[in-house]
Image (cartoon, rainbow, N blue to C red; front, side, top):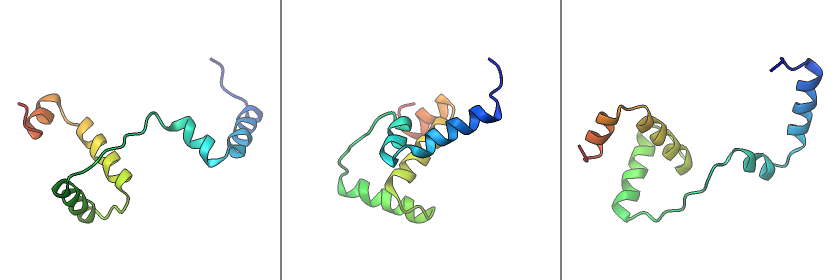
Amino acid sequence: MAAKTSAQRMREKRARDKLTEEERQARHVSRKIVTELYRATDMALIRVMARVAISEDQDIITQLIHAADGLTTEALRKHIGIA
């Protein structure tokens, strides 16, 4: 695969800049997860968000998923209680 020229990169950038926010998001979103939280779980989520100064539910959930993904399988299983 040959390197892109400056003109090719600029054309692609202009095309991306023309996308609406909805179109831009549709290119990146893999799936949407909708869930109901019990009161105690919601309160735990709120406490975690406060501890790390993250105000958006989606942001803290994304960070938690990536943190869990970085654990070894053994550490993850131990942490969530299925060792």
